[in-house]
Length: 561
Image (cartoon, rainbow, N blue to C red; front, side, top):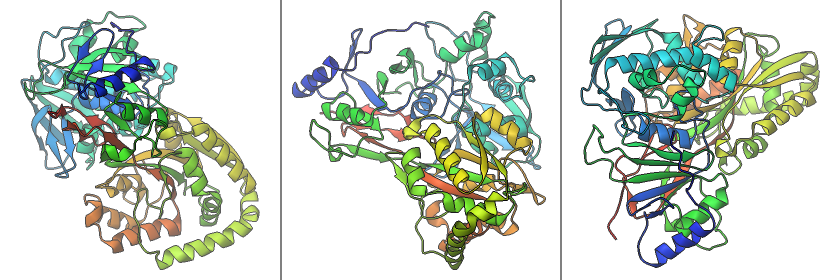
């Protein structure tokens, strides 16, 4: 890959940006030692990436923005209409038994022409088959996967949404090219979340032709992961890991030849919150995620910018295994929960954006406490007093924390220390381990855990959709990602009734009932929640939020001065 060394972004660049604004040239001019452009945007992001492949990358604002702007999926979720819309697929049908999904593909989707690859054909069903076979290889158990899976395991790469990809292997029996522009998915059993899976950030369509063109070698997977060839509105121009990624306009974008309207999009990786805010104030960046709320030393305030709220909540949750001793005891679960100071944990998990949960639900909702809530709180206080006696008899507990990216300042080492300290203070003998998503899925499959701690992303407009999957049961037995091994007919009916509703359309009574059931039996608890947000220069228009934290710049453009 051709790497340009020089996106000079500090020191002199800040002064240049100030001079640029003072000269009246306006925003959007990117000064680079190799080029200048009047029609570019710099997006200050707080997170870096391990590679440039959405399938194997961690989930954060940088990786999702790359996935949204460089690649496409079969379908996409439209939050405004609360439905799934065609993207690479022009249409689809579902069999009566919901076991077969057949997609008709557009015939005009072209892959990027880049220095490392020139496509000889447009996208076909063969590329879709290749892309999903690659996902299934990546999520295969150790010793049963391809070289891709083995390489990823050796490298230690981890992704927050691995469990979502794992379900491709769990629920998809086969992916078949029916003809050049028709692809068919055979499911293992009916699954109502299948379209959500396909719209997920990681389920991008890659080029089989490009992969086959790379010579076989131990580094083939690394090369493929770091030389993206997508179909999106932007293509990779250059990058420097942990510093910047420069995307340029795709001149052959299939959706609309007039798009994108920007010529360049630079992702400026700036982990420090105050520094991002300073760059916004000096004009060095036009967009920033999680900007500092404080006024910086250079003066100015966030009110000078337009803002864009997130469509998702980031929630850290504890799941108690209700099928194993000692966490099958409600008293033990309540005692452990009573030891968790959610305000302290929130400051560790999301140091700049934590919200204290007002309930056990993994999103921000305020309602009057139910009787059940009050009774549970009283019981928790009593349990806190006798917790050492209860838990000292419980012996060793096995706790697994899913590793995650440092997005939002997430400090997993400190989280591990807190849990170990709090559980030990209760008289337990905790064995706390940080594990990647692949290892966690194997541990869960063996039911070899007492407590699991994970981060999850919940759509603000339809939050019960994902919560429903976490308490999924089939014939009264836990299924899918039900880490708590908890089944409740009452809870299942409540979640079934509301899983497709926007938060504003769910009745207060149902929210209270769902919360009361979870508080009473405590199969899980929400430790802390946070919501991402963005500010941007008012001269920039057309930015669209993606469903998973990132921004879509397909229609972004600079307004005339």
